[in-house]
Length: 354
Image (cartoon, rainbow, N blue to C red; front, side, top):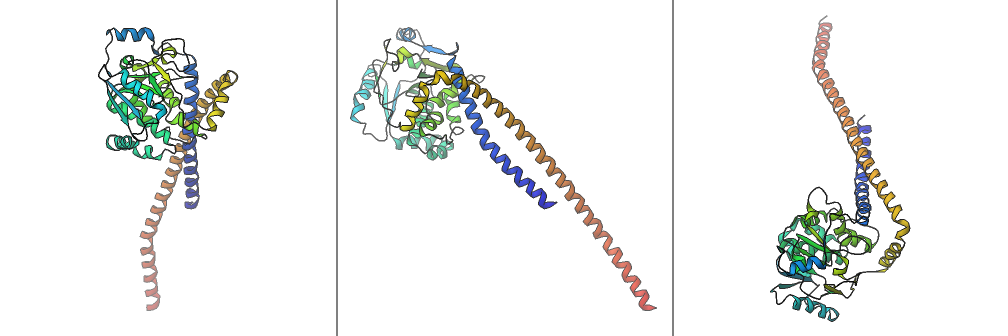
C-alpha cells in the first residue's frame, strides 16, 4: 500500500509540475491573443495625444506633473557617432525649459536595480539577451525618477512638454499597441508599477529571439500590460501619442520626433516575423479563434489542476487513515502480547511443576 501511494504521489507531482509549466504558456498565449483583439478595435477609452492636445499644453492650460528630466541609455558613455546628432537635438530642444539630462550606462542601470529593486535583480541578470536588460532598466528608471525616456536613434524636433501630462505616456506603434522607444512617466505611477512587477512572470523562453524580446520586455510586453490592465485603473493614467505626432509610420502631421531606425538587435528571425505580419489580413481571424481556444484551454487546465489537487488530498487523507489504523493495530497488538506471553509462561510453570 505504501509503495502504491508513493507511486501515485510521484505521478501526481510530476503531472502538476507539467501542468504548471504549460499553464504559464497558455496564459501568455491567451494574453497575446486578447491584446491583438483589443488593440485591433482601438477602444474609445484610449487617452489620445495629438497636435491639438500639444497646442493646449503649450498654452499652459494643462497641468504637467511629470518632472523635467530626459533619460537615455547606452552601454557606456561613448555614444556612437551616428546617433550623436539625435542625442544633441533632444538636449538642445529642452535646454531653454531647464530640463536635466542623464545618460545611463549599463553599470549605472545595474546599480539602480541592485540598490532600489533588489527583488528584480535575479530576473534582470537571468535575461539571455542584453536588449532585454536595456528594455527593462528604462521602466525602472522612469518608475524611480520619472521624466522622459528617449531612444538614442530618435531625435527631437521640439520640446516634448506634451509627454508630461499623464502618469505614463507612450506612442502608438505598428502594427498594434504602444512602443517603448520614447516614454514619459511620473515616479511610481500605477501603470509602471504594474509593468515592473509583471516582468518576472513574462521571463520565459519564447522560441525566437525577436519574439522573446518583444513579448518579455519590449513593446508587445508593454502593450499587453495596457490591454489587460482593466479593473485596476492602471491604464486610466496612460496617454497614447497618435501616429502623426509620433511620425515614425505616418508623416502626414507635424511630428515631434525624427527617427533613424536603429533596431541594432534585430536578426533573421525578425525578418520572418515581419513576413508573417504582411500576411496578417489572412490570419487575423485565425488569431482571434486561437485566442478563444487559448482561453478555453486555460480554463480547462485550471479546472483540471483543481481536480488533481482534490484527488491528491483525498488520496493523502486515505493514506493517513490507513496509517492511523495500522498504528492502532500495532498498539493493540502491543497490549495483547504481554498478556498472551504471561499466560503461556504461567502454563509452562504449571506443567513443569506437575
